[in-house]
Every structure is written in structure tokens, then in C-alpha cells.
Length: 186
Image (cartoon, rainbow, N blue to C red):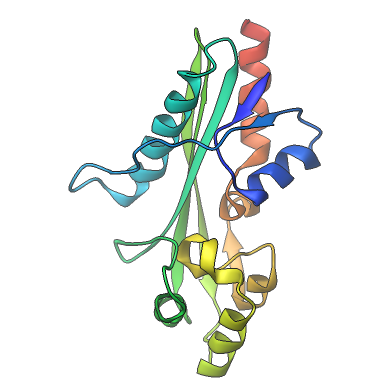
């Protein structure tokens, strides 16, 4: 059985979209990262930590862990804690191009695969009114970089270069290919 080491509604939606059976058990792994770790290395590091924590409880299963960050000019933008933090992040992203990194780890007792995908996202210049209207939807509060590309946040995005599903939080095409390869090796 595949176990998703995440409570993310978006990751669940993507697994369901492709018809992949799974169980969900959010990881309780410590998400502290080493000082000085490069932004592009953080998501894969955390995905492995999350998957290992759940695999320890389910050693007979295959575990899928994932983590997504938004990076702008070397600064990591996580999930905002307040509406003001969300507004600050959106002001920073306004009219700029940023990177979204999603790290994935697929682990079982005898196998593992982990990788990171990256997508470049360009935002339209945003007015303060647009920012406040978007925050009022509540959508930014549980998302890295304070936006969700699959929701109303799509209105903020001018263009992307890369995998849309990386920005959504799970590069499902690449995940499915890794899962099939690992299953064939079993």
C-alpha cells in the first residue's frame, strides 16, 4: 500500500486524479533544516525526513513524502503565519519571477527514490487591492509563498516555465513514473 506522508489536500487530489490508491498519514517529522542549506536542497531534504518518519511506523509499505518551497532571490517564502505576512509575500512576488521547488521521496524497506523538480513562475504586477482581495479568500494561508496556483491564485500568475504540478505541490507525472519503476523492482 502507498502511504502519503502528508495532509495536503492538493497532494491527495493529485493522487486521486491519477487513480493511485493510497492511505494518508501526515508526518510528524521535525522540519528543522541545517543552517546554510541552499533553498533548492530544502524540499528534498524535508521530503526524505517526512517519508522516513512514516516508514518507521509502516515498514511493510511504500511511503511518499513531499515538500514545496517558494524561493525569490535566495529567500525562502514558506507558509504565512498571518494575513500581514501573506500580504508582504505577495508584494515581494508582485511583478517578479520566482522559483518553486518540490522535493519528493518515495521509500520502502528495500528501495528509495528521491528528487527535486523546479518551476519558474512569473507574477503579474499586483495592486494593493488585488493583494487584499486575494488574502480575503483565505486561500494564501496554508500555502508556500502565500498563493495556490490551482485556485484563485491562478489570477496572479502571468506565466510558468516547468511543471504546473510542481507548483501545486506534487509533480505527479514524475512521481507516477518513479512509483511504477519501484513497483516493478519489487
